[in-house]
Length: 277
Image 1 (tube, rainbow, N blue to C red):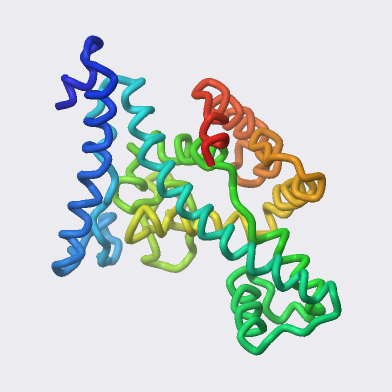
Image 2 (cartoon, rainbow, N blue to C red):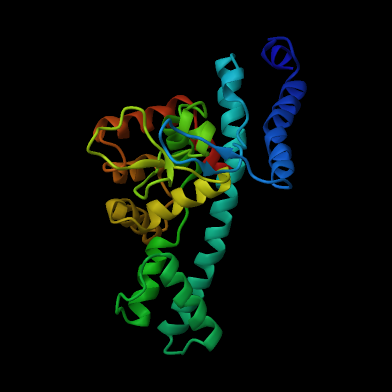
């Protein structure tokens, strides 16, 4: 099948159809895996074994044609990112409703207040002692989407186009760390005095959801959220290239990392994915 996909004279319809099949097969296998006991996986010599679902990723390493690998990668992850953005926009609409009620001097119903409290918890604003109006305003800064182009570019570089060990064994697409023993995979080059691990996720969806929550709540990305909020206030489309400036602390490479994200977006015409959303 892969040789047929790489063959230059294959029709576009055939190629696209096979890409969809290739991307969908791991999802079908994942459903079957979930029907049986999850396997025990030893992730490092000397490390405690942990239970984890098998990776749901396509085998990107097996795709030798670079253009086809990229096309398959973007097609596969675009669906997950779009789904998460849709979920967030539904939440944002509720927060905007609460803002409108409070702005006109109204009171939230019991159910609405419970929903607001839940959002405050999920977006790390519980116990902030903000007034209801200020709380809703801050939630509107946090409860918002990440442009598909930016998420795809980060996914590509952080997962080595879906081929990194952390992506394959832990469904970690965005290189997120954790600090509890056994919470993930131990990096091979970790310093002796370091304790972090690269977090493991049961599914790709869980990894993407954690990535969104990280950018929308972590103090390190407050500047990204500020830039995004200003674009909203000015009623401008979200500009992933500008928002990338808020990722300075995402990588130790700093500005070099941001330049790499810009290059991935430009070379692969990822802005076209934003126009589809």
